[in-house]
Image (spheres, one colour):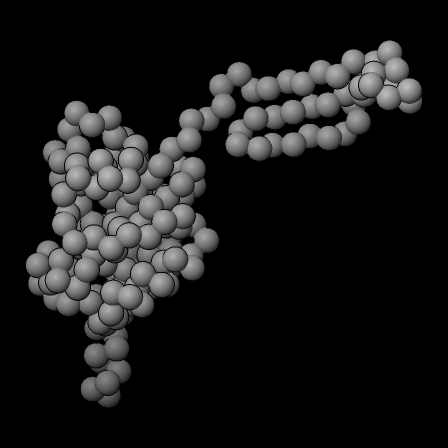
Length: 180
């Protein structure tokens, strides 16, 4: 058998085509297709935060989360929810934060979060892995996610070595620059 050099990967399935017997040129030869026996399951990931003053730390979180799932949904806390959870309103309006995230290549879907109930969000958006992120950005902690999602067959995936840049740091630098 002669391999004709077509090796394609689509959704985790590998194909190797060999010369076929369907054409007079290839008469008498067979086609074989090999598939990886266990294609990776399609996983839907979820992470959330305020994503105010989008920065390298936010991008690092999204890049690392997307590398561990097939689709990534990002929840953006509304101004009111951010005020309740963090004690301060975001600098950027919600519509701008949503638009920025819609244009990040690692993000498949962006939603506005008005209620931090993870079980309700899981029922609505069917994610099977959650990436807690950094709790200082309004994301649930690992312990909180585990408590809220207990019994729902959702994997909690901590992302190690995230960049420690946070919007509060950027805001502080902007405030110092304004004073100077």
